[in-house]
Amino acid sequence: MRNRVTGTAVLLGVFAAFPAMAQDKSFPSRPLRIVVPSSPGGGLDVTARTMGHHLSAAWGQSVVVDNRAGAGGTMGPDLVAKSAPDGYTILIVSSTYAVNALVYPKLPYDSVKDFAPITLATTQSQVMGINAGVPTRTMKEFIAYAKERPGKLNYSSPGIGTYSQLAFEMFKTAAGLDIVHVPYKGAGLSVAAAVSGETQAVNGSTVTLLPHVKSGKVRALGTTGKKRAAVFPDVPTMIEHGLPGATAEGWFGFLVPAKTPPAVIAALNKEFTRVLKLPEVKEQLMRDGSEPVGSTPEEFGKHLVTEIQRLEKPVKAMLAAQKQ
Image 1: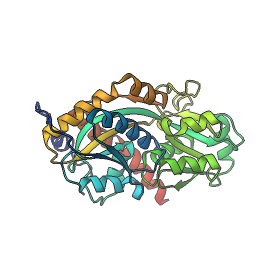
Image 2: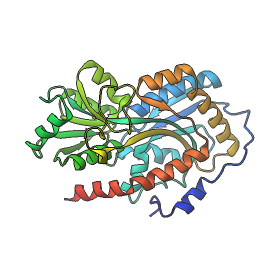
Image 3: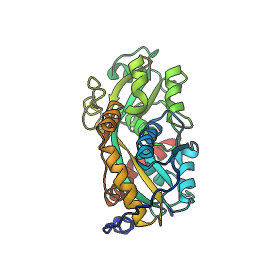
C-alpha cells in the first residue's frame, strides 16, 4: 500500500541528507498559501496564522491561510500533493498526519514520497478535558464516574484517525473505560462540542483547549507529555495519574510538494526557522502551549518516518477496538 511504512531504510532514503543548497534569492516573488487541514480555531490554524503573519512581513508577499477541513485531515494534504512543486503552496501538518498514514490504506497521496519537508515547527502535549458541567473535578473522579456509565459518555475529536482520537483511545485503554467517540470536522468544532456540552470529554492540543480552560468552560484533567505542560503547571501528566500508556506528545511541521527545487526548500527553511526563533513568536507559541523547534528538512523527514513507525502499534489497537 502506497502510504504504509514498509521499511526504515527505504523511507529514510526518501528524506536522505539534503546537500548544501544554494538559496533562491528571487523566491518568493508572489503570494504564498499555507494549507491547513483543519477548521479555523484549532492549534494548526493558530500556528499557521502566526507564522504567516511574520513570513508575510519578511517577504513583502501575502501569505494566505487556506483551511481545508474534512476527510479526517486528508483533504489538505491531497490538495498540496497535487499542487505545483514551486514552494508557493505549503502544508502544515500535525501528528494526525502520521496517524493517517496508518489508518487509511488507500490515501490519494503517499505520506512520505509525495512531500518534501521544510521544518519541524513545534511540539506540544495533548490535554484531556471535560465539559465543566460533568460533576467531577479530578481524573480519579472522572474515571470512576465513567466506569459507572459504560457507553453513556461521549468524547469529541477532530475526525476519525486524528491524533486526538488516538490519544483519547490510548487513555480509554489505559483507564479501562467505555466512552463513545464522536468525530467532528476539525479541532475547532471538536472542542466547541465539549465546550457546549454536546460531548462530555475531549482530547486536544494545549493551543486549542487553553482559552476554554481559562474561561472555566472546560476542566483539564491530564496532559499527555512526559512532563507537565508549561501552560498547565497544575495539571498532572498521564504518567502521574498512573496511566503511562496514555502518553502521546504532539507536533506541528511544514511540508511542500515533492520535487520542489532544493534552493526553494532552503529559502523556506531559512525563513521558517528564523521566524520560529523570534522572541515574540516564541513567546506567543509557548503562551499557547507549544514548544518552538525549528529543524533542518532532513531532521523533520526522519522525525516523520520515526513517528509513523512509533504509532503503528497503538493505531492497530485503536482500529481493532473500533471493529468490536
